[in-house]
Image 1: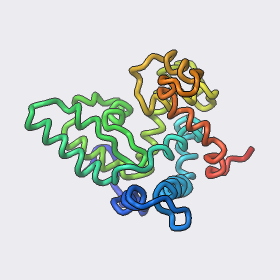
Image 2 (image 1 turned 30 degrees about the horizontal axis):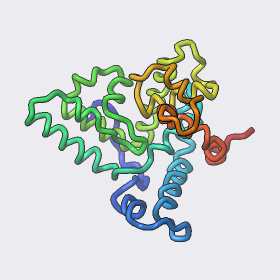
Image 3 (image 1 turned 180 degrees about the vertical axis):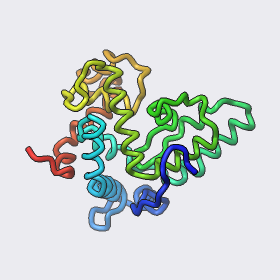
Length: 234
């Protein structure tokens, strides 16, 4: 029995090895949907398939649907999903066991269609990541294959990130700066000072510090497309 969620077999074509090869090894072709064209078609299909979940969960967790959708569409791709939870995780756990290390490496594994580190999942649930056993890590990874669980944990984590920088903010209604900060924190964590990220938003194009806020800025750049997919009414 999984202590974190009810495991089910959700019928959704999760990113797998075939998807990875079609994106990575074939040239860009809009007609045959290969290369970058396939990647973006998959991202759009994921968000279209899950738009009702995104809107519902964002409302229940009191964050903008745009923020959750932006993070989702940014994270869906990359390493085949099951390889991360049933390969990379176990490999790191084995290394930690052999080297008598704590679980820092294995907690850094990102799992789920909307990739999120196991460390962040544990913290979002109020669990000290250092106390996670190998079995608990595996159970969390299994839960993250379920889109409902995955999206809800991501939404809760995003709300916590908003509160980290803006304790008194209305998390449901964010201005552009707040949205960029939350998105950038999701990608880069909380180690960098808030003002550094704000300064990077306004830094000249080409400046090295622009990278600190690039993840959040891309969400705003895709705002119109995301709202079309979510069928947001003006």
